[in-house]
Amino acid sequence: MKEAAPRFAEARIPYGTWGSSYFPAWQTSALAEVNIGQFAGEAMNRIMGIRNIPTSVLDYLIIGSTIPWHWKFWTAPLVASCMGRRIPGYHMEQACATGLQAVISAAAEVQGGSNDVVGVLTFDRTSDSPVGVFPERRDYQRTKPLADVWDNFGFDPATGNAMIACAGIAARKHKSDRRETDELAFYRYDQYFKAKDSGFLDRVLIPLDVLNIQGRFLGRIDDDLGVRRLTPDALRGMFELDTCITAGTQTHASDGMATLLVTGKDKAPELSSRPEIDIQIIAKTEVRTQPSLMPEAPALAVQKLLGKTGLTMDDMVVVKNHNPFAVNDVIFAKVLNYDWKKMNNTGCPLVWGHPQGPTLTRVLIEALEEAVDIGGGYVLVFGCAAGDVGIAAVFKVTDGGKQK
Image (cartoon, rainbow, N blue to C red; front, side, top):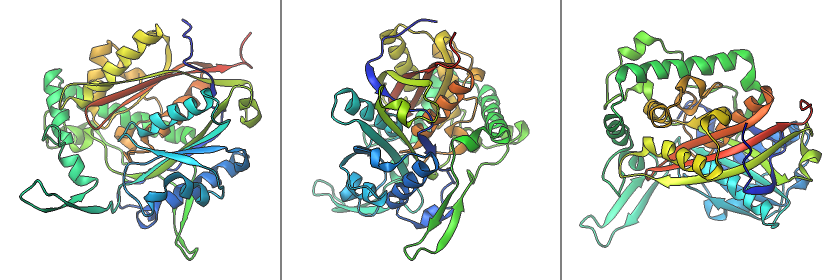
């Protein structure tokens, strides 16, 4: 296996300092009823307690969310207070790239020496997303309401196309076949349910209780609600909304949060539940492809990343991505000449949903856990984001206890 020089040589993700909520689908759980920023801060505190990590070790907090929530003006400092810590922090968002970008930003904080232990906390609630009212002095309609999730999904102001249209356009460009897309979607669902049945997901997903402002119990978030088993016949029978796009070959809106810690290489063993495991952030890159071709952008980002690091797809022991459409994976397999059956072994957003901000954070957590299971190696995580953006990053997991 080749060796790649890490761009973030000092930064580490301590093993086990992570956790994610389940991602219940839009309007299916008590998360639809709460301030998601407050919930996320409280949930991070709960997860760190379960992992036996005192939140007093935190110096800084990077939060990532993309949908407006109550008191978002106060961003990371408010969320930190909900976690029980008065520490500074920073809020960032880059559509569905947010979850991975937040981890890279935390690594930069550590690498630059600004902070020693940085908490990454990403979250979003698509349920009951707010509607904003905007004055438009340059438009004949002087006041415009905008539903943050649904109107943005339905219209890219740079192209005039909806998200679903970009999937169809990309499918036609790459001559994707409906039969292969259906086959891939069924395979992805099967991967998810096998991981769930094996107990793998129980190691990364934390059941969480939701309370109202009076402290009364509203519900328990302990399942990816909205996910059901699909059969090949059911997929074949679905109406084609655009080229290769059906209800079964695209993801669904959901709610949730995910968190992890980033620190220096000397501090990581103190926080890790398995100090012999070393997790490095090797490199990250982004690209922006041509208009309305978002599903091909991740493949181009991975090509660029491999060129920068000198690594190849054969060097990757785990490959996992954010795939809002099944055509994302079909196109990736064509561009990289890679077998899509070797990806997403423990599930993926195509199946378990799309809460935007925390999506790629959960993808990363599952990918790192899978890499530890197989003894370590290079981990490739990538995905797409609004604006025809692709993001990709490589991590390296080393298990010192298994090395000779």
